[in-house]
Structure formats: structure tokens, C-alpha cells
Image (cartoon, rainbow, N blue to C red; front, side, top):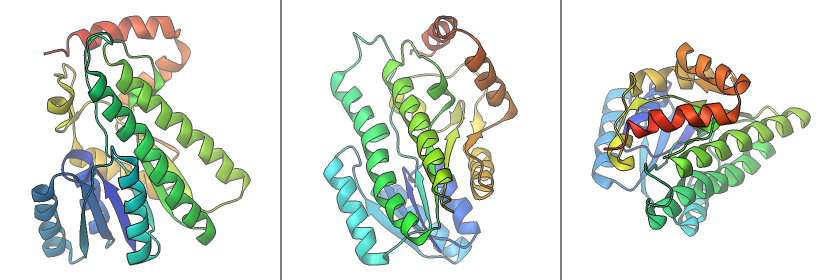
Length: 256
């Protein structure tokens, strides 16, 4: 059994790789931080007696995404699990934030995820088996002033996942596709996105454990806690304008 995890150098991605290794999956771990990946590789192989394969890839470049797929296809033929976890964020007024950084967010959170999901899903459908988990966010269910690009990118992930889920159902496919939608998590995201969370943060190891278990049970939308599930409920029934109003003041407190 073989799994591929993007954004595996830290946080949720790293802990999902550990959870899969506990289940005796060999893992292909993908990120830009070679040192962190090599350390994780040594840990997984020593602790769980599995094979870990390091791929140093900048997924914000779409050619790199296609190359990664082709390399994995040539080396392993098929994978059983794909975890699309790599992601970026930024915080600030839309007119003030860096266009270059926002383009990286779009290229990583949307384009890379789309490419990898599409290419690996086609193979999984041919074999009629496999699991894909796209890491979205509770942010994907509401507008997000002061983090507009990040929220919008996660909305794309949620809607793409839901649409493909329905296609697979009508195809009577055994392939399972999930969206993980956590709230604040203790990861390196705060530093990368220039934000400071003021609400309680979940441990990434706890989120990863729940996420992997629910993925294998076929759960379509996976929340990190009951609290985040309640947030989703209110985001669904309350007007978007009111949610945007609330999000503005929550986000304003995050800006460092």
C-alpha cells in the first residue's frame, strides 16, 4: 500500500504521513523543505518499519506538479491514497497584500491540488479503488475579508471535492474523495500567512488522526471537531453578508 502526501514537512501533512505509516502504508512525502522531509523519512522508517520516499517539489509551478505525477507513475505505477495538503495563506486588505504571494496561494491551493487530484483520480477510477483527501478549511464555507484570497481558494477546494464526489457516486465508483475542513490548528501556517490566531488551536496530530480515520470510513466532509461542525452549520443558515461582517472582525484581530 502506498500513499502520497503533499505539504508533508510540517503540521497536518507531517502528522497525516505518520498516521498512514502507522497503518503500514509506504509514503511518498512531498514538500520544499528537504531537511524536514529527510528527518521525517528517517523517523517513519525507523518507527513504523515502512518505506518513505522524499520528493522535493515546489508545487506552485504547474509543470512540477505534472512532473511529480509522471515520476510517481513511472516509479510506482499506482498509489492507493493521495493527500492534497500543501497550502499557503496571507492576511491583510486585498488592496495591500502582495500580488506575487497571492498568485502563489492560487497556484498552490488551487492549481496544484486540481492537477494532482485529476491525474491520480483518473488512475484510481481505472482500478476502481483509492482514497483522496483534499485539505480545505472551515474558511471554505464563508467569505473572508482580510484573508480574501485564502478563503476563496479553500471554497474552490470544497466545491471541487463535493462535485467530484457526486460524479463518483453516479459512476458507482469505489474511489472515495474527502475534504478535510479544520479550524485553527497549531502549525507553521501562522508564520507563513502573517497571522496570529486568537481562538483555540487544535493539535495537528489530533486533527490528522481523526481525518485519516474518517477518510477510510468514507466521510465526505471532515471537520476537526464538533465545534467546527457547528460553525459550518451557522455559516450555512446565516446570510453571507452577516458572515462576512463577523469574519472581518475575527480576521482583523489576526493581523500582526
